[in-house]
Image (cartoon, rainbow over all chains, first blue to last red):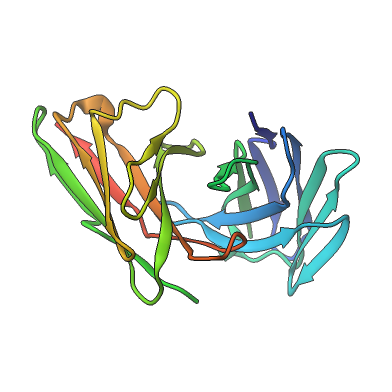
Length: 111
Length: 116
């Protein structure tokens, strides 16, 4: 099975940088994805890491270390609109390649 | 990007009734669709995987007779919550993957179900 652990909540102020960690245990590994979800909305895709290292997409970056079964999402120049829940996710090893989500981190950005 | 729609976005029903939720991929063919359930302040829990033209595969602990899934075409999957009870109240989200792609999964906007 798969399990992905994240901190439940992170708080920060506008303009700051915040890192959301994800540790995972999987029977097979097919990459780590990150999703953002605002209250009452659908998850939206942010980034995907298949290999070790840092992927940068604008203000958001994602890092993966497969040897440590660890990844993080880095949000820079925080804005109020970044207040949301963030989920890491992995695909399982079955033929369906199901996406399994982490426990989720609620990010609160204050002025 | 690809668009997935869900209907209805919000539904309130009486206990004991059945509710059908539709999930459509609007501009691509989805050979595989997924149904998730999300309780307040919790993560998305996968309920089942449906493939066009075949029976759905349910996750452990999900009652297949209660949550009926039909993937009738490459653009439509439906979830029917039968004999709904208050504990079935939740946010139901569908997701679709384009045929042949294993990297991109698109999510619908979700359906908020409230059972009185």
